[in-house]
Length: 121
Image 1 (cartoon, rainbow, N blue to C red):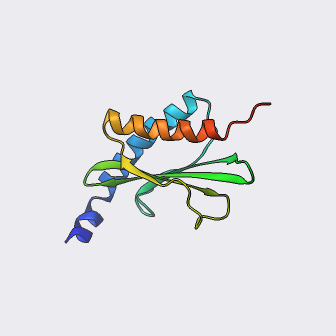
Image 2: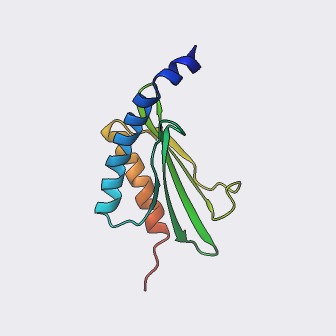
């Protein structure tokens, strides 16, 4: 029953994901953060993805954030790992990003990652 409901509401899911993604893209662009973006597509998948690569102490780190809809609420899943080694998770995060509190948590998480990988030149 849930599967059939989800099949019939894919366009709603993608709209919810796209709205949340637009918010995050705006925040990242406003902070001059370079990222790769994969948009939600009704026929293929109903999530969006953001990726940025940063230099860690010993290796390049991948920050991967996916936005999906659960019960009409956008959620973010974040995974940080050594580039090319997704099985070596370091800092997973999962939380809603509909409320201001949820959005702030994600922005703080992103800022903490970026600041921890910042290099002085």
